Image (cartoon, rainbow, N blue to C red):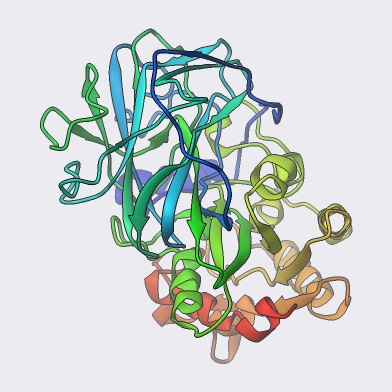
Length: 423
């Protein structure tokens, strides 16, 4: 699903009725550098500060302002990224994960955001890749920049600009952001102003920012989920997603803490791909390695996904088998995994007696199976008094399925930080 806007209303139904055939790709980036410049050292305590899950570029009928489907030519993308962790240096991951051909990046930069597409004066840092200012990323690959010295605060916002001189074809992107981003003609990657930039609704060409953080940050927790984790029904340009609220709680805590990565995808399912509409992403079971295990400093995972599977009338047994696979693969990586109960959807367009029965059975298993390292009961926290199958009025965005800003805050508040941070 998408941001809470009337033009996305029809898409809500589509999100639970269809999904993407794209095969998950995870490969080491193939990089060829051109140009000159130097890079910094890579030592230090690195964590993932921001890492949106990518999808294949495609046309989205109700969102024509995102050009990921038709691609870019001689243009600069300026992505707006909210950091969960602060530190003394950053490095950026350029993505061509779902690209059909090699991607040439002519120039890239990172800066602290000022107003809109303008930067805070003096903060623009040109990115290099193996000391080169240009990089070519193979189809299916990614490229990690050299570190650059840049003092960034936790819960601050960066601008990551990527200039592509040649026709790209469809580009890897994250379509539903609840965040305005920017696009300009020509090479404006190093521009300190917002001149020439116009607004776009999607993130493109970048799927990660790592931060060299203080020792207080002991790693990263990845929030794996669907639209309720991703953005849907939260206020635009306000960073009110539940992982953002969790990052605020973790940053306010004294002593050791974690960075937070949002691996939510609108319309995503745990079990199955979605035919013909790749903007919903590949299923969770097909993106664990790339979106979870490959994140810098990952220590733990919060699994909160399944309402779209229920909307497709998946059975409790097959969903539980899917959860068990996520648990097994996550623990095999030496990571902790926490389960979150599926939030209520009574009164929404997906409600049927059979689906509510599945919801009850799945949530009972999450709460009682003992297979997770801990459980955060989002369903209980958001359920209506006397009617736990429906969202409480104060947490309902209006569609009886997606929590609003207050609901996302309540979810974040339900996460037991002592459990999440225990060694």
